[in-house]
Image (cartoon, rainbow, N blue to C red; front, side, top):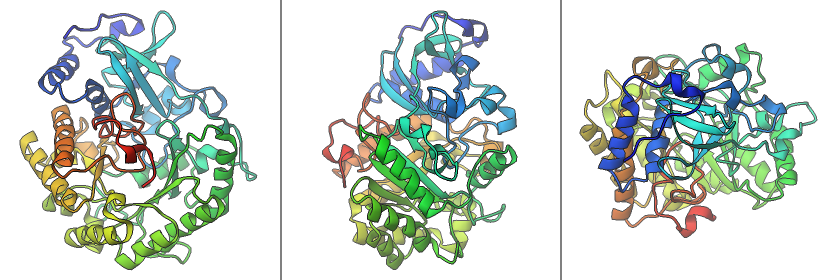
Length: 458
């Protein structure tokens, strides 16, 4: 495979050995059936990207949709460590096309890492590109500022603060509870920075509402509905931190459910309704369904028993791994197996000092979990682990999991789906390289295109 030629202002930043380029190209050659777009995308998601100032947004006053920090930081540094990117936000996502690898259109969530060998910068012609080890490898497109972001609520809050959109506008992401009641070292998930992300935005003086008002959510959605004339927004996700007691006198199912009920009453059938919550008892899950939720995400985080107990101490304490899994299976009786889509955090299986030390072991464990759920007709999905530095696992594993793990996981995921005759899950937009919009992992980029339920309703 031919190497890209060096060009542009990033030439001086070229790594002496080009080790990352050789790693990426080596994996493309070893796994030719995994789309090359997914190899680049997974590397960007696990290790982040740097930005020249020419590629940063003008926050909410420019022509580029800025990063909203919709739940986690998804950065490899704290805001004070990001330099110019903390003052002028990077874009929410970027889209990769063309270049030396002839990439099909690939949407990638932005995870900032000033030390990354990948850099987004304008070349001598003024056109943005992605540089790896100093060599331009493809063109970069930025998300345009949506018209609905240019409007504010009566309170003065921005739509981006209350109801940001991601996945190139496909998904309205409603983090209605910005912190988690699993708190402290003995309860917080060891890879999760939701609580720190809330603290850092408050410390920086940024608007970052802890509990979002139902009426303000409806007002923001009304603005989106009015100005999204192309109907690009297709689904909404209701989510936030775990609730172990009550918020505003409501338990978890009732707290998140009240938003779903209000949305469905105000905008019946406008969006595919999804909720990310703990694995709750069946009666609580039924409430979600009764409120109008169509897809349920009771995330199981990591499959291995020992790692679940170590990495998710709050979930182990309050629910327990076995009960968590039983509840996931029970929820299929309510929503139908196809509409239960638990997430896992791909890569934490290899986090040291407790994780697997070989890719073979990690893939075998994760595939065991995939087979468990898929044998029941439930299709998990995954987010590529970003080792945020304020988390215990991020501090001890700043480079995340090996890229080989992520590429082999894509292979194992697709093979396991085919083994059980499953297709891409609903509510994630189109599948296939060049078509997928899901931005925080490459699982949709790696699946066969054209699955009817992939772009439609459940």
